[in-house]
Length: 553
Length: 72
Image (cartoon, each protein chain N blue to C red):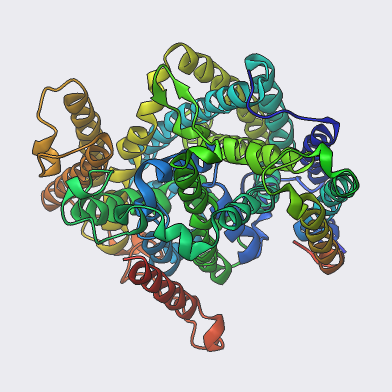
């Protein structure tokens, strides 16, 4: 039996969404003439367009459902993922790293590795990224079908194929441009479709002050329970939050994951590219109002039997992902239900489009042109990008069916990020800021980091080692292990890269101009009005972040 | 003028979508306002469909007008 029932008007809203995204794909096709248009949206976007797409590429429905459920389980501690776990990294990308990325006119993050180091480092990262993207894309597809089946009673195969084919059509027609356009549409749909849940929840509880007074102390704080892991439901200490989440995982994801960084590459100039993650940071800080508030509302309602609110349960285990759909069913009448469901659908499909557009670029430039056909023409690369989109979607479907028969693969999704992104961040950091780092150091350091991350994951999973030995605490959790494993992978890559670099020859300075600090002119913002400077806007974002953390301490 | 210069801005398209969806939700809100017995959701007495639909219509109109003559 489904949780949410749809009427004709709800279906009409969903139909409008599908008509728009397909229409946008066909409309943009006539503007997609070159590979630059297809893979980088013509490099013509403003910082607002690129910034909202940058944020939306990460704001998937799986995250919205999962984080609302996590808030029900852990309270406000979840806000760390949106604040310290994102903002410093986004600002660092905009201020310090973007000049190297953007000025080198690369098409992808592995493309930077080729220029700074060598072909084999690029191919290693390109293959790892492509595999990760397909896995994540397939798991997202599976999760979407699961959610639609559980809450709407939709047929598993039909919902998966319909959304996959829709994404395949509009991304293959106009590439990154249509992915970015639909991500922005998704951004507005998510806010209009889900923010009302927060508002109505606050009204039902009786105001924000009352809401905070009705949750346990640990549920309403960010840092005051972080001294002892046992005091917060997540079982993660401040060290794990700051080092694992705030530094390695966050910087690894936001500064090197091509899925999000690709949006900044589509900006029209360096200032817009630098402002892309900085603009996104302000909106990122607002996302807790979409996920934290509903999670706390649901927690309070569930404690009062007279409210008639209870999460679904699977085999005696609470289904925390049901928090948001149940609140939609509670507050939204006909019409609004369609909007809420469309917001979730848009989140899933835009996430799918983001993964596929990143995959087709890395495949085309960093694997196909780099290894298979070095002399490919512009027209051939454009054709290959479209073909890679279709193949990427089909492979995602294969992964999704695999995930269906092997549900625990969902548990590995967070782990997959730390396999690829955590060591890559060490390679990037060293490569961009120290010219002494060599190609051999980068390649073997990256490989050592990736292998150590997978090995540590298996060692903890199969209890070859005590998890406490990597988390520094006898009280630990899977999430704490994820955070700390990322730190160890980063450190192993960092140390190995430096050690090997000392014994191998660096590239001459002339080959590193524009790629390394000290050999690249600093962006000069002095001619701009103060309020237009990326540095000034980043400081404002940082102040807001500090204030939020102190207020919710 | 190049073809790129003629491309509709994303803000215009967002405006059109909000207008279309806002119109449907407003119509639903009016029906629910006239027949409140047919609505069984919590806080339905606040008529959320009606005023949220109107907010979407207003936002859509704003985006459509502001984005009509702009590039992306």
